[in-house]
Amino acid sequence: MLDNSEEYVTEDGRKIGGVVMEMKNITLRFGGVVAIKDISFDIREGEIRAIIGPNGAGKSSMLNVISGFYVPQEGEVWFHGSKRPPMRPYDVARQGIARTFQNIALFEGMSVLDNVMTGRLNYMKTNILQQAIWRGKAEAEETKNREAVEKMIDFLEIQHIRKTPVSRLPYGLKKRVELARALAAEPKLLLLDEPMAGMNVEEKEDMSRFILDVNDEFGTTIALIEHDMGVVMDLSDRVVVMDYGKKIGDGTPHEVRNNQEVIDAYLGVSHD
Amino acid sequence: MSEQLVFAMEVILNGLMAGVLYALVALGFVLIYKASGIFNYAQGVMALFAAMTLVGIMNGQVPFAHVINATFGTHVYNFGWTIPALLAILLTMAVMVVLAWAVQQFVMRHLVGQEPIILFMATIGLAYFLEGVADLMWGSEIKTLDVGLPQGINLWLDEVTFNIFGYGFFIDNLDIVATVIAALLVGALVAFSQYTKQGRAMRAVADDHQAALSVGISLNFIWIMVWSVAGFVALVAGIMWGTKSGVQFSLSLIALKALPVLMLGGFTSIPGAIVGGLIIGVGEKLFEFAIGPMVGGATENWFAYVLALIFLVFRPQGLFGEKIIERV
Image (cartoon, rainbow over the protein chains, first blue to last red):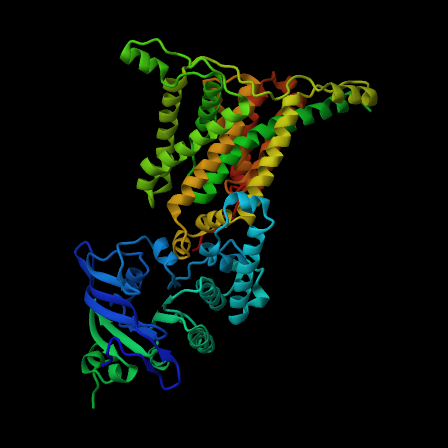
């Protein structure tokens, strides 16, 4: 196992740093139902961390705890070396944690450009009066943010639909726009809830490539939930395996694949 | 040109002016409905409350004078000063922002995620509460409101039309001012929602709450802002109606006239509110002029509602509203 303080370089030459986010003994209940039971794990700087598990294992709940949509009854969330008090989702977002949703949450009525621009809201500091006058500070700010947004639009290859209302886009492109919006915020930690759900093979390959490119180019730390085992094993540096709200495995894809408990619970008991 | 046609033109012009005032009230409804899905029954009362507060502040009235006097046996009614209109308008705006905050903090915040009908009921409660508070605060007598807007017949238009048609149009100066102000207001609102950070956040919240949260928008803040903007629109409507027909409690009933406007224009469209208001204004004046004499007059009381009913049957989303699509 890895030492918490140790930095290392992966086989493909990416540098993995220290721990940025640490979940300590998280328990989340909905009434009598225990969605997450006493789970601890960490996310290191620059790595791609996957959370896998069968349906109803509590993966999405875990992501919602990280992004502040759920507040756990027990346990602590540590971000960048300090304990995080219970926070509203918008405060979590302002701390630099961006996310996408399993059932795409975009602003359907707005254009792709406007959608991605909302990712920059927290970088806009001018007040309403300055914006009313527009010249000077407000204009410079808009231009600067617009540049950052165009960069992301280029990066995700959605230039051709910049002005299209999101409601008219096919599913696969919507997923990409959502990713662009999350990336526009230049997050310290990017959370992806089943980024490849419902996609065909070609779209999945595209999305995998984008996720790797994001991590490679911007050094963004990524935590993702995914069903497709093949994809997870290819993409991620380390994997957390959940089942019925409990953690049953944690380690490199290779370690997890050979973990008997994981094989039994998730991959199916082998018959040879 | 035939005499009838010239009369009709005057009627249409007057209808347009009246329509602008309907549109102003309808605009307040649209703003809140768009951003939070709440049909704010209290919008009319908010206009009344704003107008009463404005008059009270301008005249230096002591708020809650009756309550204070009854409790402490004092006889204070006035501070003994008057405040210039512009300053009073700014102070009233501040009061409307406080009101917006209070509505969000004490009512709407606790009802997030409830059924629309429950939110609607809450605004009915709010309407009666606000009416009571307005009465308690400023008294129930009819007051005149004069913030220095020009009133009376526009002599220039009268003369010009007389020279052309041989008949002078009667157009009220106040109506012209109201039209100009309404146009400026709509322009400002559109610019606000399209080009400012807060406007972008407002549109985002109107579209998807979850997504808005995930990019760092505080729903609470946006809702307070929206109620404040609606309060501002109510203040403008209150000033116009109050100047025209005095500040009185029947002012809150103009909200009812906004309903057909909304059904025509669609609940979610700012241009729709304007166009709907104009159609209702012109329609009812023209109908009264052309058909009224045949059916014994007073058609203005019901024309708007019948028109709305027809729209409900054939185009329930209104002229500009979002299409209602049900997935099966």
